[in-house]
Image 1 (tube, rainbow, N blue to C red):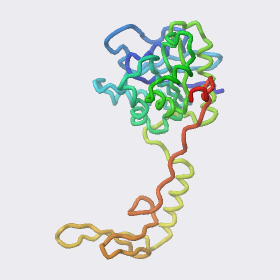
Image 2: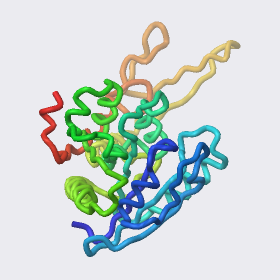
Image 3: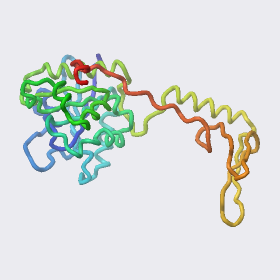
Length: 280
C-alpha cells in the first residue's frame, strides 16, 4: 500500500467526474450541479487523508471537447499536477449512458497521455444506484459491444460508485484496494505523452547501435542521380544493390529494412472485485 497516490478523473462532460471526486473525498470539494453547460472548466486538485494516507483527487474538464478553450494549457496543467508520485487514471462513465463520443475515449486518452496510460486506468461507473439491484457483471453481460471493448482495453478493471450515498465509504475502500493491486503489479508513476521503450527494446536498440559504431563500413551516403532528383541510398560495404536500384539487405534499425521492435507488453491484468468469467 502506497502512502500517497493521485487519482485523475477523466471523461466527457456530464459523466459524473466531479460527483465521483466528492465521493472519494467524503466531502464537497468540487462543484457539481445540474447544468446544460460545462461546470468544470479547469483542472482542480483536492487532497484528503483517507485510511491513513494522502489521496489527491484531480478533477478535469472534458479534454475531448473540441470547443474547450485553451485545451492544451489544461492538459499541460493536468500533467504538472501528477508529475511526481504514483498516479492512477479513473475514466468515468455514466451507467446507462454510453454515447457515440465515448466509444473512442480510450484511444483519445492515449493520444493525450500516451499509450501506457491504459496500464494505470480504471473504468469508474457513476450513478451506480441506477443498477437497481442487478450486479455490474450482469449489466456488462448485456451491454453494448463497444462498451465491453472499452472495459477490455483497460485490463477489465472497473468499479461502480453510488454517488447519492456518499456516506458509503466501503465503495471508496474497494476502489483504493483495486488501486493498490494495480500499483503493486506495475509502475504507478505519472504517464508521459511519449511512452518509453521497454527494457528489452532499449537493450535491442543499444546492441544494434553498438554494432554500427564498431563497423567502419556502416557509413551511408546520398547521391543525386540525373536531373530527375531521384535519391538513392548506398552502403559502402555489406550491402548489395539490386538491378532496379533497391537495397536488398539491411541490418540496422530505422532504415530501409531490418527487424522491427517487439510490441510493448500488454496491460497488467488486475482482477476485478467480481468474477469476470460470469461476463462471458
